[in-house]
Each structure stands twice: as structure tokens, then as C-alpha cells.
Length: 354
Image (cartoon, rainbow, N blue to C red; front, side, top):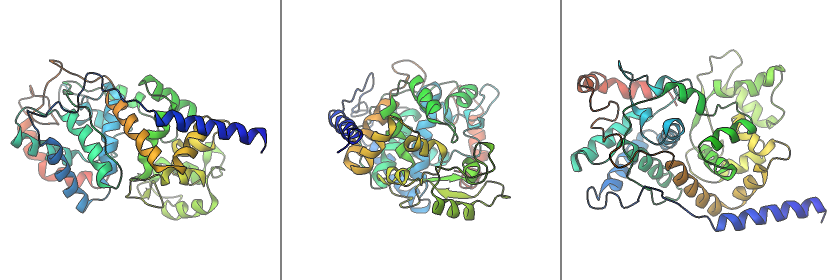
């Protein structure tokens, strides 16, 4: 065996040993936070998400993405759920979110059901965290003990949403920097990227890889040629970029390790996916290989990284509030009228986006 192979084997083994001793820190949050005040909250969330999956197999991925896009802005505080008002510059209008985030109607349905069982008790931020975990379970992944006790923000920050959320075109250096700002390391980056093992993406997020990578007029050389032909059929060069492609072309609605196997075959859909494996000399390659070879290892690390992400700057104690409606702060007296006027149209609007 060459010295290079020995080095790579040692690196992979070292990672496996490290991942096998993953520690989980809950910080100020506690999985048993609602044990007395709302003991059935997990079951309620699961029922609503399960019903939503019956008609929309994409919704699980969308709910995981909502949690991610919330935490990376001003912490896990449900700020992404706030609609635009005279005092709220909604994060939903930020470039990474506009015409893209989905599942707001499902979150509202969960909130309604939870309020009926436990009025003014469970935060929308905790609902997002629970919905993400339940979505993984219901799509054949493993769950985790979700730390709870977050409270909801009374503010949103569209500027931060534009700057903090990684773009589909991000290179590895940009991805690492975006995660490091949030206190997440390279292992967290690779593990959390595994959420792209289910869901869809619009052609506009990767069309340059198919036709004009880095303004070369050529496809991305790190794109499998057979997969390239498939994508060119889904996304015509003169199209408007609104068509959808599976993030995982093999098992698009199942939470599994196939995302990493796809990267090994150069079948990563987004540039921000493929760079984890195709960046020369990158430390992410050994981690991708470890997850591709061991689904149990991936599930374990994904759970640990989701808990770590869910601990980004939560509001606790007397900070923030428990919103009565997830889309509006409690001081907004017009919220009930706005909710009533938009309730019927929310689902039709959201179902057309990712």
C-alpha cells in the first residue's frame, strides 16, 4: 500500500473514532422542557407533519430547511416566520428565501394544534426544531432528543439573511466561513449538508453548472457527464430556471446516506454540494467517504450537528416572547385580520416554490 493510501486510511479511521465519541451539549435548552406544561407536543408535531407528507412528499426537506434558514440569521428564534409589516422587514423577502422557502402553512397548522392543547406555552422556534426532527424520522432517518425552551424573537433581519445564508454556488472556502461564524466546524458542514439527501431545487440554483460554469461557456468539469445530460433535459438553456430537480437523484424523498454516494460519483446537484468532495486536497473528502460508507455514522453525526445548530443564540428565560401566531409578533394588533385574509391563499402560493 502506498504512503498516500496509508495516510488516507489513517485519516478516515481517525475520523470514525472521533465521530464514535460524539458528545452532545444542550446549553441552556432541555429536551424535557415541556414535560409537564405540554407533554404531547412532539406527538402533535408528528401528526401534523405526517398528514402534510401524505400530499406533499417534499415537505419534510422544506421543514428542515426552514429550521436551518432560521438559525443562521439571528439565532434559532423563528424570525424567518415573521411576515412583512410596518415594523418587520421580513427575512422571507431575502434573496435566499424569496420564492424558495416552503412549509409556512404547515408550521401554522402545527401552531394551531399546539395552542389548542397547550395555550401560550410552546414557542414557534421550538416548533421549527421539532418539525425538522420529525421530518427526518418520517422519511426513514433517525431522530434525536431535541433540546427545547427557545422563545420567539420580536424582530427579523433581512440584511443578515442575505449575508449569512450560504449560496448554492458557494465554494468550500465560503461554506466553511459561513459555518464558522455560527460556531459550526467542518464536520458539521459536511453532516448538515447531508440534509440535501431529500428535497428539490430550482434549475436557477445550478443552471450555470450545466451551461456556463464560472463564465467559461462550458459545463462544470466536476459534473458527471451522464448526470449532465439528465439535468440539461430538466433545465433547458433557454428556460426561466423554475423547473425542479431532485437534490438526490437516487432516493429523492428518503433520508439516507445516498447524498454522499452521489458526491463520490460527481452527481452532486449544487456546486455547494459537489465542492465537499471535488475540492482538491480538502479535509471534507475523508468525511464524505466516511458517511458514504456508514449510514449509522452519518445519522449519529447529523443528530449531533442539528443539536449544535439548534443551540445558535436561542432566546430563553424572559427574552423574546411566545408568539400566539407564528407569522406576527404579539404586539401587532392587525395580525389576526391579516392571517384571516391570507389563510386560504397561503398553501397555493407556497406549493409552487421550494
